[in-house]
Amino acid sequence: MEKVIAGLVQFKSSPYEERKALFAELANGQSPEVLFITCADSRIDPNLVTQTEPGDLFIIRNAGNIVPPHTRVAGGVTASIEYAVAVLGIKHIVVCGHSDCGAMKGALNVAALADLPHVQDWLDHSRAAVEIVKAKHDQASASELDAVTKQNVLLQLDHLRTHPAVAARLGTGEIDMHGWVYDIEHGTVAAYDESQREFVSIEERYAALIAAG
Image 1 (cartoon, helix red, strand yellow):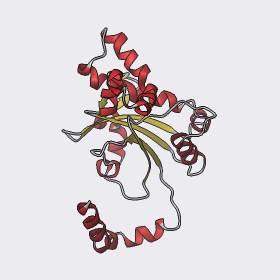
Image 2 (cartoon, rainbow, N blue to C red):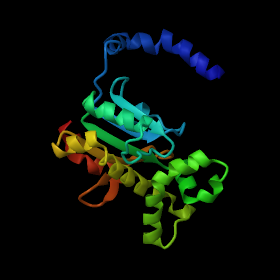
Image 3 (spheres, helix red, strand yellow):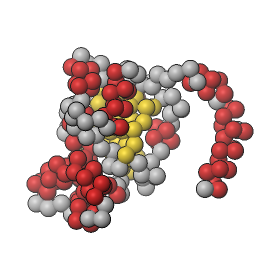
């Protein structure tokens, strides 16, 4: 906790002063372009990885970067998605998984979660990803962690399409969706390429955008 408190003191005297004009602008509202859905894992820092500033990303974090399929039951993830799309008017949605994901390890070994009933129920939203990998590889063990992590990202993108606000904007071409997996050790991100039906490097997936920028 000492590190956190020291950071707060340092923030006020240095980073805050350096971005004082930005914070003054943000004090009156936000207009992020990207909804970034990622894992609650402490090793993931969306702004650090994407080198973005406060106000650039509307972030949803939870165990396993999960998006429950839309239902009439209110939930924090569902409400946040609805607000980001319908009120903030975001243009892009990123679902970003990551290497060595504890949630995906749990999804692969549900029996180990017997004492964590809420975690077990939550990870049921990733069950289809495990079943797909199992069908493809005749098993779904720890060795398939990377495959399950990627399949889970694709599954959550499918779940996103069931949310009315998202479906409406997809139908009018006002939103693009992106599936990413962040490699913690190497600092790289793989992005899903629909034309190739596989994850490729960020540089390959967004070559045209990078060249234009």
